[in-house]
Image 1 (cartoon, rainbow, N blue to C red):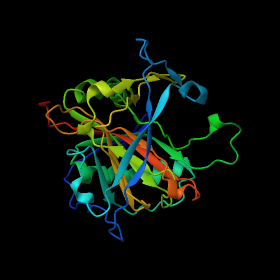
Image 2 (cartoon, one colour):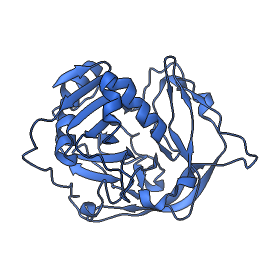
Image 3 (cartoon, rainbow, N blue to C red):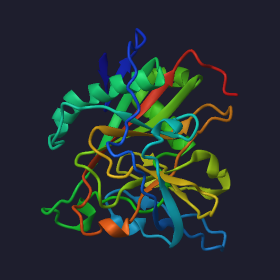
Length: 300
């Protein structure tokens, strides 16, 4: 294992010897929620979506619509949902890290845990963890720009263009070679405390046609990203894990190089559960990783 600039880069030399079992709810009782998902509302005048500027919350405000839907609870049927079938997958994993306060400790202790878990879950040959985001209340924030709140707009973290650029950005001279074989960009999402308020909803990849996905430039001081916002569609199928615990880790596929019919990208969003609005705000961490399968060179 070696560290590369701005990312944890690891090359798998042997196959993992064990698979994590899919997490199971202690109660086994599912609880679907009738709610709304916030979507981008196309102004209909042919204009492109305006770019957003990192760190300036006001630039993230765009026309939106709250679309009524039912978010189905996967409790009791978790093993039906996999990265390839739906684009998301729940796994049980106990981390040594509990507080997630010190960024360096997260990189030194938590990144290797997630790297190993990704090897076991995906069978990858190489993994590069390149960033993480923590969402929790911040009473010392000087302004809303300093907070990382749950995102209630349906979105995908990275477009295809942005995913390829992340490979070039973080893998250096290996980038061009790695772009010629299968790679994925996966978000590993974990509650820091059991989630009641603002749970995470994930959308079945196969229920979202390409026409519903709108790339949006995201301007950083030193580079340009491109997440995607989502147009509303009653055909979208949304899911969540009720009262998700820190030991229940959700894998979310943001991009897959493969075009053979498997799930390729998953919109996700926080949503309002009306019965949980008086509970403690959500605490969560998400780690983003490039996941390489260097021996798989066939896209279809």
